[in-house]
Image 1 (spheres, rainbow, N blue to C red):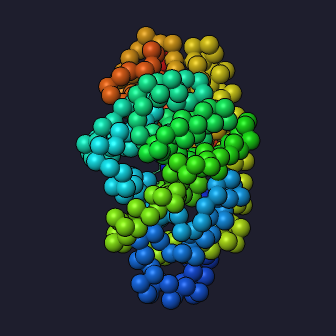
Image 2 (cartoon, helix red, strand yellow):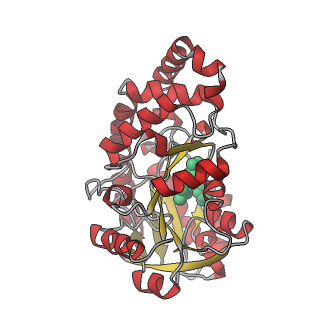
Image 3 (tube, rainbow, N blue to C red):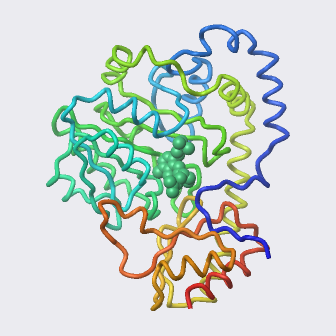
Length: 365
Ligand SMILES: Cc1ncc(COP(=O)(O)O)c(CN[C@H](CF)CCC(=O)O)c1O
């Protein structure tokens, strides 16, 4: 029998519009030979015309307000973070959500900076603990907290912005990953769009809404940090290839991107509904779900005597790709009282939902 995947890490190839991507690539090759060939293709921040397109798109889709000059394109979110880190002083103190994005946590640890983790409550990062720890820079994922899926309400966003504005050298890194997919709540404006003190550094990526392999991520620097960036990092050449940038630009400017997002949302809302229905019918009250009102995954905790390790082993034996939440509990804390798993549906065809839920059930009970 073939594998069934609850992975949160992949996008669904079957609905990616390869044909229109290909025609955008042809157009880019035909129209942008100049950009591809001369020095501008290696500019540290990425091609200007591509940054204009992204800035325009973000202002409509996320209420982000920025000039193209503030955007820095990069080959991965982590790489951009390494750059950002060098804009701050040596003894800057960092903090991030826990459970949280382990790759960011490891990136920070590798830089040997002062790093604290901050627990979540049902509105997202805990403001009380944030005030007690009092870092300079805090990393949050407000659109769809990674990995718990909490959507940070507007009230908590305002509290966070007020905290940052209280004193100088305080910044918020807003990782707006997964923000394209909102289901119940309509799109809440980004922190960056609400920020009137220039304290939010906005991170975005095309890994979820397009293809992880495109390796095109970006950060938006507030003016004061942009000046420091140009002084300290202006010599670092761009790390994302111009061909990918120019194809993306065609894809967005032609309206194909907006069409693709709309189509993905319909497909995913439908899949998520069917998956939740099948899970609820099979597990009933033995399962508690969290974070299902946005994004391409949610979490579920199960009332079972089996250990996470045992369940993971059985799932593998049943050819079920399943990730549990322990790796995202940073600082070695185990924040889940019962076995908790990420249930991603970006790569779970409708016709495999029943069988997938059945394999999950047999792995857990
Ligand atoms: C919170 C968060 N912010 C950004 C990215 C995007 O990074 P990049 O492709 O380099 O732009 C991810 C990517 N998440 C991966 C797939 F979902 C890996 C998940 C895992 O590490 O478990 C992410 O979780």
